[in-house]
Amino acid sequence: MALNLATFKTRTLTAAIFVIVMLTGLLWNQWSFFVLFSVIHFGCWSEYQRLMEQMDKEYAGITIFHKYGVRIAGWCLMLYFTDGALSIGGLSLHVIGLWMGLLFVFVLPFAEILLVRELSWKNIGYSALGLLYISLSWGLLTNIRFLFFESPFPPVGKVLVMLIIGSIWINDTMAYIVGSIIGKTPLSVISPKKTWEGTIGGIILAIVVIGVIGYFVSEYPDGGSFNWGFPVNCMIIAAISSVAGTFGDLLESKLKRLAGIKDSGNIMPGHGGFLDRFDSLLLASSCVWLFVMLFLK
Image (cartoon, rainbow, N blue to C red; front, side, top):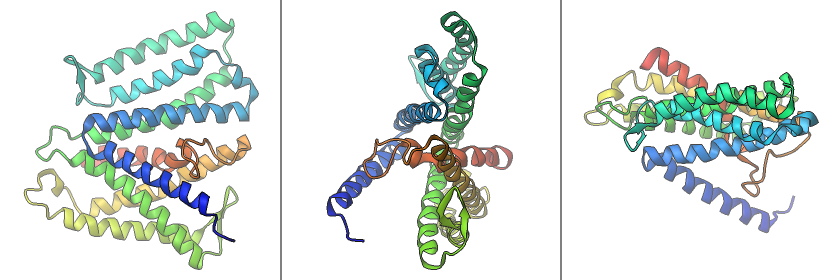
């Protein structure tokens, strides 16, 4: 197939802008991280609700209050999981998220009854799944980022997030390369281009690369909190991120297939939407958070 130069330029420019924005948000400071993933949170919600509308036309009839109220209620989870690291005017975002979240829990059902006269449990179920799939996942990633903000070595949370994202990126890249070279066995009918050979190869290479990086990071002068099991824990995080990320990719592919669409959105020309870019990270964040809470905190 001949190279479409215009498409290639668009994809390259979009990818470059994406990398710059992501690195700025991830590495600048705690506020830049929170703002970045707040934007991603609302972007994912917009696309998720569009998917649900395509899957079930009844969901397209939800009230404006339901549509936007559930997004804000989900964002309250992110506020809550800042774990006291961020505050405005002396008031912790953790506390704001707690009280706003409780308010929405009580207000949303009553508002739904008043506006539509009856509750559609099916529509409520779709929105509840969105809270688990999107809001809880970003809330837990936020918690990882701020979990060790008072530690003697401040970048711990930042490095954990970078380990997750780096593992997913390495896994995706290596899975594509290995699959292109030796891939023969389809992984799933949901995503026919993925192969078992590519998937396994990507996971193994991600574990190895992250393990090597973890070895050198563990030698950081005055490592402080970094001495909790590097590079073994780095390799475990890479394994969890890679496996969970693969399932996250398949889950989003299944949702798109049910909705009958190719891309979840077009925020990134040539690369799709928010869910297309962050499907792997959504599921990986929750799984790594559980590991961190059980074994590293």
